[in-house]
Length: 260
Image (cartoon, rainbow, N blue to C red; front, side, top):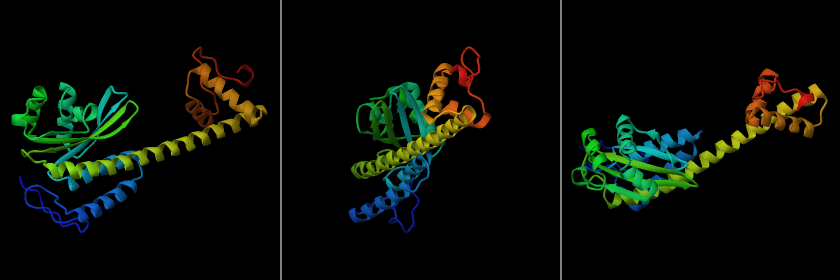
């Protein structure tokens, strides 16, 4: 299968068989532009989706791409994909418990499957991959943070689609993607922390006005109500701000200033 030639001014024209083939200078410029685009996304999901899109454009041999994450080393899921094929191939790996993606996540930073017809490492997976029309794969470990893992997966209907250059470009691309993804997640965490702080501040203000409390007393009241109702402090503050009431406790009693 031939890859469509790309005439985007940001990158050189691809050759007619294996995709993007830049010289070192062109690659540096292109990856710099990719990094800028990734950092310009407004959310973590937007960054994930742009990583997948850019990976297909950038890494030689890639026809489809997806990002897989593992939360607490247990919950495995695909968080972004270029198309339905990516989702089906990933699901085949999850169902069988084997495949290049899982090896990249748990064992190796880079895992390649050059030819599904001659692959012996993952027999249950390769049988399903062959039926889905995938002939070769290349997976990169994208991040490892505590018990959370991530991998970038590339797919092709052609055998031997990924070579040494694919791995070289892919590793460089994955490093840029990992930095951009970490920055996006940090921005979201900071934004959420600020929203939580503001929400708790509003809830404190309500209690201070309603019960003539100091700021410390109002905060203590919120914490006690949160503990009694077994509800996160942020969620309890949100209910108070939007309904004027504190959350019900497990026993069904309504939190009151006198009783908390």
